[in-house]
Length: 181
Length: 387
Image (spheres, rainbow over the protein chains, first blue to last red):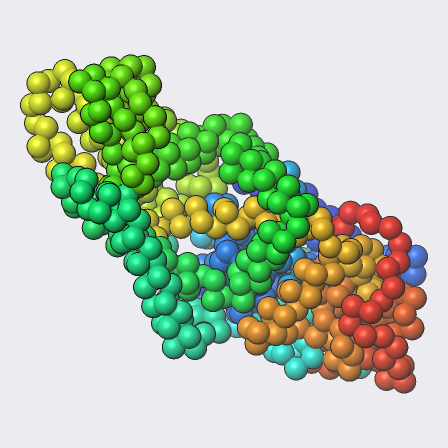
């Protein structure tokens, strides 16, 4: 069964180990594909990691003028090096704010689920180094049916449904119970 | 590896077929005319290159059909239109010439990756491009040499006598062996590329034999068989010449027919890349609707929103006319998370407040008015790099 990323952002302590691990991955040229954002700086210390959501119909690929972004075994890959022209359409089209363009190399980069590792049965680097299990690498069905908390994997953007392979666990906003289940 | 064959939103096939048929028809007529003019009314057709001629014509027509498919895609069509608008102003022309020199001439786009990759790509691309120029000119009979005096050739291009040269002058040797020089460059470039594919760990996992290795093998085969023709003619008294010529022809024809559907397809894409610097530099900046940071140009955001609309996946913010692309990348990530946690998302300085829509998206918060239109936020703050 395919494995996917599961993000339980309530567990994130903002250590940024995932970003540093990602930077050190082979072929990543010291550029992190993972983002850790402060959600409300000055009000809380809450942070959240965001990797690529690996959409079933990726807006980045749909907006690419040179068809540089392909989907391989359900994983949305970084732009093909020979095709990418660095136009940045993908960085603006993605509703999750993931793709970046490396200005030096004139090349888009994004999380490709550490294809070099996962294709050999290893978890992505961010999963390996996360000290709080905020980022897990689970069977798709298991991630989608987490019993401990509600999950997100179909997103409604003003009437457009975007299904993602990455699953995000969300806080229980009905009872506001602390999210460590 | 199995390439995912998941089909994205499809296009009306009739539109593509009629467009492709039109483009291919026009290209076929232009090719026929160019051969007629180049060969001075079919008077100088080189029958030794007959096989190459048909493969070249077919290759160009297949390329044209693929270009028709490519330019049917909304994002490609929009960027091409932006590119064509460059021709309407002197500034656009200057930009075009400069980026042509930077991107195609000295290929600065790849120099930031490493000097080895730059050297490898310069050797390969210029070797292949110049070879194309020479091959097309000879095969399509656009150019021929005419013996006007016992030891003087006239170089005739499209029926026009361009210049004369001695049959064994330095210039003549350079021209006769043009494909040998480019062949040497291609072989060196291919060997460098193969070495990289042998040691680069990421490439070792992701490369495929048909897409990444075969083109290099094919280029080497063409270059070696082509060079052997010279070796046979100059130093072996023509031994094996026919066999070498046949194997070279087979390799070139396979290359020509494979080219439009292979890794070599990136060659026309690179010419679209010439438009990009102007696309980013010549339009008004766009400020993020949440934090006010300038992160793009208004033209490009409009283009992206139109493209996603055409592709049937507009990603909007409910209850407003905003799109997710009206936010910078960081604000998109943060807004999604804040809404998921039940927090309100305040769009600074615009009195608009968003909340989760209950289905993992954003919408106008209850009790707050839609105080702005998409892209209507004033430009706040100064340009600073995105995080």
